Image (cartoon, rainbow, N blue to C red):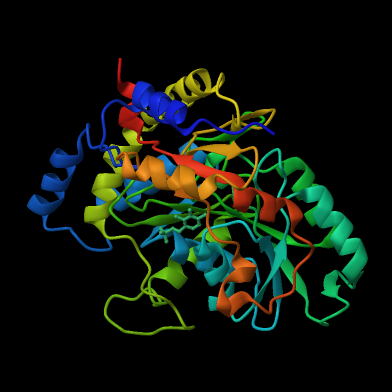
Length: 387
Ligand SMILES: *Cc1c(COP(=O)(O)O)cnc(C)c1O
């Protein structure tokens, strides 16, 4: 194990990012944002019905290689709706990585289900399909088309892979495990718009996929999200559920289930249409930035740069390094933030959060190791546009 020379890391950050202060991730509005938002205001159609919503949904579906996209108010709402449409019910368990943003796990709770934590793969940082399969062999039984946790008695209904920092999970392996055990696959692709796995876009690789357009994501609508699916009936139900489950009628207010007010306003979709027009440029800039980090950090001992998994093309939403050991992590975070380069540790693992402490889980050695050693680096698209 090599000790990292922190001044060398600061030099590399200066070489890649320029002079401080440098944010972790800033939005970039270099296209038709002003024109489309103005068009939206001029037309009076600012709320949850409007031409930009339809246009945004068509654009998203094409981008993700699916037939249908339903735009919603944020990524967490998208996940919530995906899980409901995947059949998750109160009392179920849903398999999900311990190494994720809390929204993945909160959405499971909103359904009245319990998260069941799965370890990560060192190669992808995402859920490890092989270890998941071994764990299920240990604790689950499959009967009458339902996978049940033998220990808790609860149905294991679905699995939620999350593409960490835009690096795709090994989805072929995961889909095979899910099919074997009868689990619905809900992709949390919040960080992976523009990433591909074996040439196929993330978000369209499971039964349902969720995207986020929060201000810190690659493409932003201020706040926003989307449900992705190939299934027309599921898409129709997603629209219904997210518009208070109101039955279509010229004037009557009739609702046939407990729905949600989750539709994306037209004014946010106007931003989204313009942002999506720039997606290819954003991804190219992010990949250029990742290349520069690789080049500048390659010669520095004591860390390794996180790269895309084999067979995948990542959007590099957030760049990251893994320190050789955990001892220097806090010193690195201290020194870089003090110097004006915004760096962050990865999320504290979900089974450490008080509300999820008692949830079922497998052994999590890889996630725990990543948690102790990972540091995210400044990753705005604009940094990749520097000459
Ligand atoms: C951003 C994010 C979300 C949620 O998105 P919001 O739009 O902020 O609700 C969900 N999962 C992951 C992994 C995310 O990074």
